[in-house]
Length: 100
Image 1 (cartoon, rainbow, N blue to C red):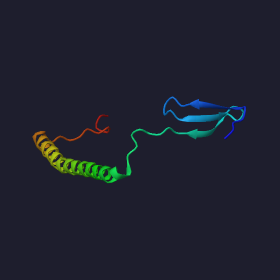
Image 2: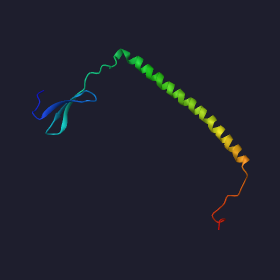
Image 3: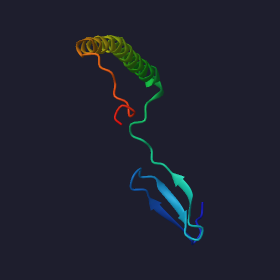
Image 4: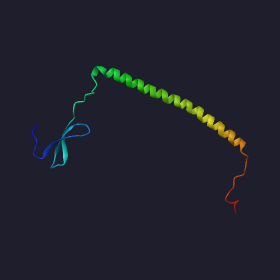
């Protein structure tokens, strides 16, 4: 494809893509991404999907265990607060009206 005089080619410093920019328009006209070296092969797709499934399952099990432990922790905190409330003397709360 032939380029106009106002078009120039730039390489992106982040992703190494080749960008063609039109100076008159001030816009990118085309973008060509480089070939990835770590691109997975189709025969590895089943293994990659199985690994992701195992990772998801492990995260789910971890969240289930955290929720089980959360109930016990809340029950312990409630019991401690109840003990503390029983130990404190019962007093009448002061109201703004009582301060006058």
